[in-house]
Length: 287
Image (cartoon, rainbow, N blue to C red; front, top):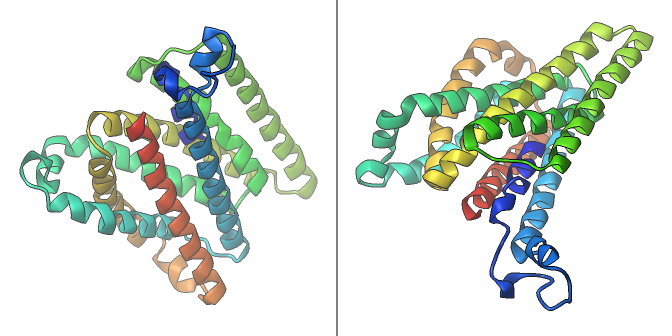
């Protein structure tokens, strides 16, 4: 998710490290430059690029599955949350006292349900969009999550931004508008305007839900712990996506002509999503 990168880069208040950690500490640059170019900033940028590669791989896998007529977005999410359940919910269940899975659920169940619904439906809508629009449109329109995320962070996390950040948001919104317009014109030429617009709307909806999920994720990981967040999301996400899978996609799953290629693409995508989720939380926890 591009929003994952924006969450990290927005933590500019924490980029001031000790002098020995600065990249430019030995060079005769101004104090502002020394404060800006730190090892923490470099590490954040590198981890963000790794996340971008994982996001790209996941998107390509989704497009391959869509081209193969595999219309099972909730199945894909369900498998991802199941992996989180096995890896982190099991660890959380072995803890004692207030950090135990049951105790955490009793005290904060409604918060994790809200986060779970936002995350599950965000994954569902963006994967569903591949059935209606193009990979390029989805990746570009997904940038809409950045201005929404900044707005939510401003109100709920009390994050403050500089004029350059606001200018970047304006450019982002102009790009979103241009992309939607281009898709409408392209769809009109191909006689599929309604389908393309539906795909774009699904992507924008997923960006809104991702922003809500990411803000909650950042707050939870920094206040509590990565293991608790991933464990609870694995539990709640598996339950929500499992119910939705049984209601909406039973026939679609049965209709898929499963073969080695489809199964491999499905598993590769799940592994990428799992690694991406964990790596994203590791970054947030270290900030």
